[in-house]
Length: 292
Ligand SMILES: Cc1cc2nc3c(=O)[nH]c(=O)nc-3n(C[C@H](O)[C@H](O)[C@H](O)COP(=O)(O)OP(=O)(O)OC[C@H]3O[C@@H](n4cnc5c(N)ncnc54)[C@H](O)[C@@H]3O)c2cc1C
Image 1: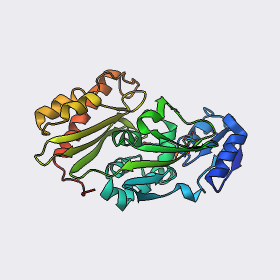
Image 2: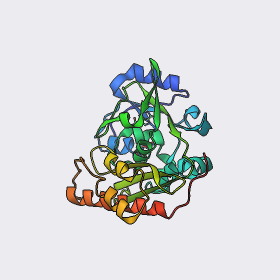
Image 3: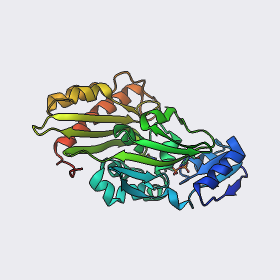
Image 4: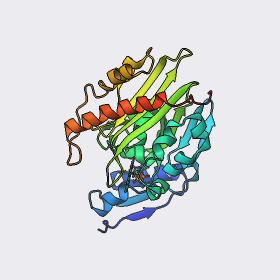
């Protein structure tokens, strides 16, 4: 289908983009990779009078290590995340999830900022940001503010972003010494979006116990979430079959599952628990991350 007519803007700086957002209010939308927004416009589920293409803003595209953290610009594509040597060495959970997104075409266009801002209940990168307790930098007319990943998404397809704000950067901590991580997903057969996705990182103590456990799930509920009860059960334990089974059984505690033609609520909960167990089991076979 053909979208409604719109005016196209191509600002060259974040400041200019914010100015355009201010000028056009809720008649405007940012265009990043376009892989969520353009289909919605073509189906006329989104009506946009002013499309502000931020693809030409070079300052939004980078991956670098700054002050003991990894800083990533919002326009960084999924392919760039998947292929980044810096991320693979210093925070490998993000590339492990990014490489599992859809196909090359989607990964070459879709962006970290677009994926997070869209607040899809089944985005692959959001659980990674939750598990790693990322910090999101948002810029608007009043300046910059920082929001914890856990506070960014309010409900399905709704974030804390105001209409005149841009998500500019995501900051991740470096992977701790002797940590292991994995991303485990059940892809939808057509879109490859996760029916269920599990991001897992554990930090092992010198005697092999789980000093810290971070688990976040996507696709299961209306927003991706941290599996706090399961994490707590893992702390201080050796990752063994019984401890993994006990934690995985609690990975959906308190969750109201989504239900659709692809996976009914009970099946989704089952998949979430099974794939949490698989993710944790996979961690037992990995070696530690490079010392931070
Ligand atoms: C066929 C197909 C398969 C896919 N499969 C997967 C998959 O397996 N896993 C997965 O996780 N995703 C998948 N996606 C989604 C895709 O990966 C993109 O991440 C996603 O579409 C959004 O990123 P984008 O850069 O395309 O954003 P856009 O579509 O350009 O924008 C999405 C929304 O975010 C807003 N926005 C964009 N950037 C910013 C910003 N910096 N600040 C504030 N607001 C912003 C836009 O205004 C818009 O409302 C798939 C998409 C398609 C079309």
